[in-house]
Length: 79
Image (cartoon, rainbow, N blue to C red; front, side, top):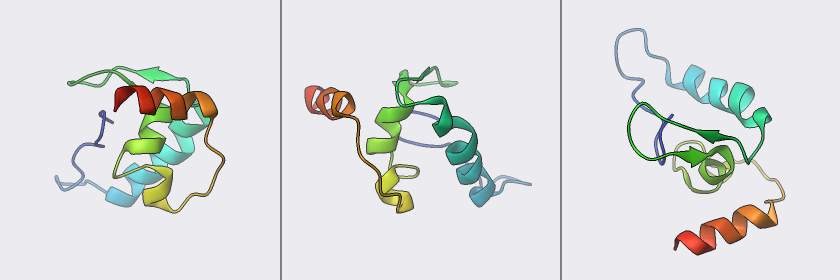
């Protein structure tokens, strides 16, 4: 996963749905404050990606949840 992206799934043996499922089921349970360092690009948090990533945001995946107030403030600060 990258800030604002998830990487490619169109390569041989790639599986887009499996990639999405892995992120949602394996990474999101680690918590919104969990920071990650991608293979390239800037560091981010899972919470920020759940708010803003066009591929795996809660909105993009149709997930309805209460957004942590700290994350809302973090996102407002970036804008």
